Each structure stands twice: as structure tokens, then as C-alpha cells.
Image (cartoon, rainbow, N blue to C red; front, side, top):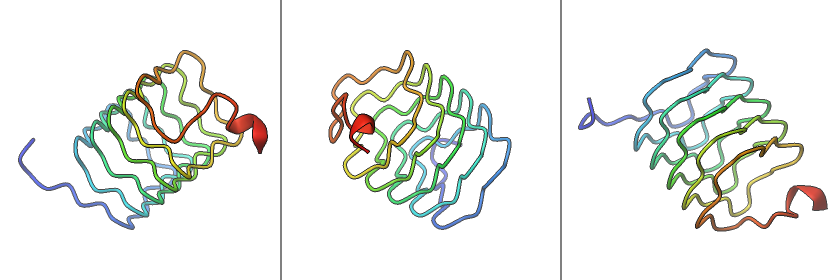
Length: 117
């Protein structure tokens, strides 16, 4: 399944239970994931440019190397998620729960980003 293209560009996945889903290297550009449950999901290397993750649950999700450029993460719960080497440039982090999140090598994020909004 690793070799199959995963094209979810612009798809409406809002409110879905996607816990544990494998979105490795998936293209989720402009996808609507509002209120979705992505607990423990594998999003390693995924492209979430301009995706809407408002109020999504990403507890313990693997977001290593993910592109969240311009994504809306307002109100999302990323507690325990791994965002190593993630691109958060232009992402809306208003009210995001970052408890226990790994931010090693993350670009486009400073600890005060959500506090400035």
C-alpha cells in the first residue's frame, strides 16, 4: 500500500473517524478535515498545504516532515503529536493544544506564535 498514490486534494473528510489511518506521503492539499479524529494517524511526509484542520484531534499523530503551510489548525488538539521537521509557515495555530508535542527541526513556528493571535 506504500506505493499507491494517495490523492485527497480538496476532499471533504470533515467529522470523520480517521484514527490510526495511514496517510503516509498523501496529498491532502485543501482537504477539509474539520473536526476529524486523526488520533494516532500516520501523516508522515503528507502535504496538508491550505488544509482545514479546525478542531481536529491529532493526539499522538505522526506528522514528521508534514507540510502544513497555510493550514488552519485553530482549536486542534495535537497533544503528543510528532511534528519533527514539519513546515508550519503561515499555519493558523490559534488555540491549538501543543502539550507534549515534538517540535524538533520545525520551521515557520516559534513558541509564541499562537500567543500572538
